[in-house]
Length: 297
Image (cartoon, rainbow, N blue to C red; front, top):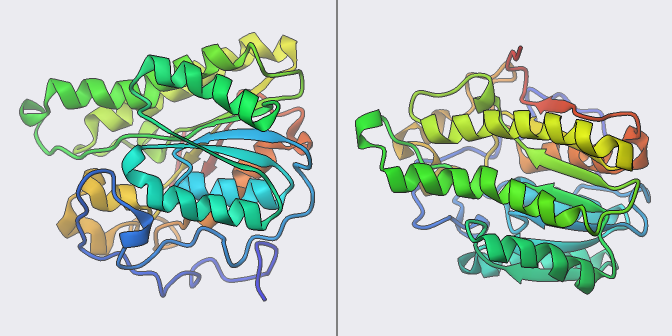
């Protein structure tokens, strides 16, 4: 059986997972994708790199967050998942895979735009897992809009509250609980470096995440808490079908990267494992690009 260590041609990998012109209402579900994304559920093999660790992952029900949760559990970590209540079906599936790996899965649904939820989420994860030493701020909002005059102020504000404010609220609450050796990892995007004209609000939040985390990394490093960022390229997740991209453009999604295809969440998870593990003890304030070859500054 192939796993993440198997030598394969990255150009031809995942050619059987073809994005379709599908639209999903709300936040979208992995369960309802026409072509399901690969979360590593059939391939990720752990080696004890996170044994005994305690992780909180936002957006952990599907996409990159779900793949990271599966990988963390198979590496020996207990995992708390944050997600929207409407994503319960996806979250329960991921929780089952975490438990199949012999680890604790804690389900904590709620809305990241709510400051009180974010602050309580950290506390609930700490108490429910019996500790906390990994925070992955991955949950995000992305809705396309092709004309700036049609971009609602409400959408602009909600995108910032989900992607940036929540990161601030979560990290501010987490420092009370995180011991030395802990890791904070945020999800940025290629959009921070190559913004699309139809993703003004989303792209600008991803730049803000980079700057915030680099400053926070400097502040928390003396306490032994490492802060880093992963910047994915185009990755096939339910978010893309739920207004993240124009529906008619989805069949060509990811074609412009050097590998000629979108990434799969399973290809992102190892980066989050590395940044959480002690192997990256001297990596602080880094933005790790996992984007299929898209040039970045």
